[in-house]
Length: 193
Image (cartoon, rainbow, N blue to C red):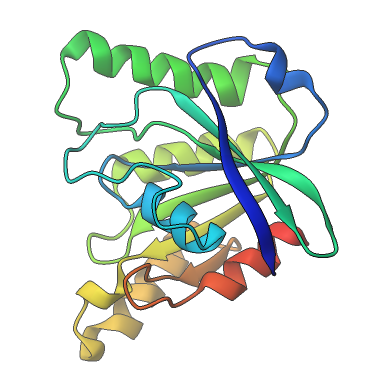
């Protein structure tokens, strides 16, 4: 996929007219500190498109990025806040959970694809599996990204990927490294399918 442009459009914390503008949405979800922003930045080939941080829980709203690609209609990359551990107050964490739940399960948002990002080194956590089952229950089109494969010893990588594939079942699993630029084209092609 040849992304020709990508720009931040808006951050939202609830219902907003932008969600009903008819532009397809590709939502990125994963636990805090899994590298969602880095995946989005490498995919869009823009270093600072989505804010990255070593501070878990930095994203506390739904951020929409308008992307244009050669030979494809424009679409939004939607960066949702991370679930699970976050260095935020209990109230802020509950607000984040409510926002994620609202976006996927209560709003009328037409989500074209959901990219569920799992830390390849950690494997699928209970939170990841809960999110996967909830999304499957809604009939969502899910792509699973095993991020940060560069952090795993080469001798352990295939074993770790096999374990993740077993728990995510029939969902497409893409090994990914923003650092080493691995998996970008494969993910881009899956998104555009």
